[in-house]
Length: 495
Image (tube, rainbow, N blue to C red; front, side, top):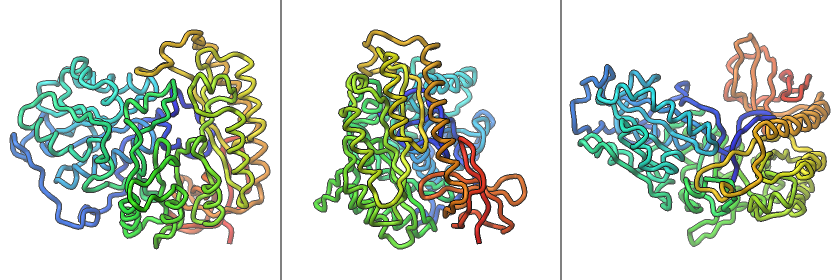
């Protein structure tokens, strides 16, 4: 898997499975009616303590605040959590001060992300007797477990991602007076099925098809926090895709820590490439994305599917982590530099141009200047469309903790800067060649500046563009590129 400090040299947002470090508060700009999501009347919350009209610490009972740290998988997990709570009659509020239930959905990929969560928890230490319920969800919950209760005794709920469907009963235990409630199973398929998912992104729907990871990279905590690989049944996936289309979405992104390791557990035994094609065939779907792919499971049939079906977006995120076979072996990445380049060759041989992005870690224990040079030379060979670059930092429960030859922090920073500069040169040259080209965009952003918009191409580039038209959000438009910088493209709507 992926690790540590993410510095983006890319166009757009962080990939799904890499658990980025960005803090995200759930959006309030898009709220599909719960009756549409559930197909039924909304259930009132079952509260065992004071009535829903009473106040806890100045906050109305039955209100919740949810803050999310991490990647698109964490975002989507929070959509599930919010959906579960909203369907039971809870109301989402904008600030923790106005909530009776405060939840932090956490990322543990790097040390600072975990520290930030405990910093948030520390803000409530002096209010621990005001009756609010405070819960820690996600990877830090799974990683730290009941240790969280010791460090922050005012926390009442610690729940991993595989137990979100059980949230109502866990909360009922807290309401009944149990001050240390946990949901920490991480080897269950129940993570896929929650009663309702709140969709907070108005343009792209996320859908998890595989959870956990079996790859056991020496630096990565994900197998510990997310558990072993469990694939979701293909019929369940396709059923949710149909529901997504009925809600008006035309773009879906399939998620997984190693999304292309998908193995259909039903008698149908769909391969990942077959699932991609089946999702694209669902009425209403116009774009299908997927992330993150593992090189060891990236095969020719995936490329063939992208070539055969234009609805499959021509973008592959294929983390390499290092260009040095020696470092890859120390990382336990299951492939060599040469084997990774064979996967790149498959993609470059496609009939459609497919953009390639990656993750790279610098400063792994024992990494030499020669190893760094091999990573830099890999950038020259592959010419990635964008990279996510990281400084290595040790994580709990990982084999790399015991490795010697740690790289000083200052040196890791230097290596990261060298890597970024190399990629900046590559992106500058790539973007310059795109001036004059036209791309179809799904418009997803509007600038405060008049007549300025932005959107994603199929190959996952963001283009900022001008248009005199109104109400373009959510529409597909053709845009001609008129300008380029190392980190972005600009253009104008083409007619």
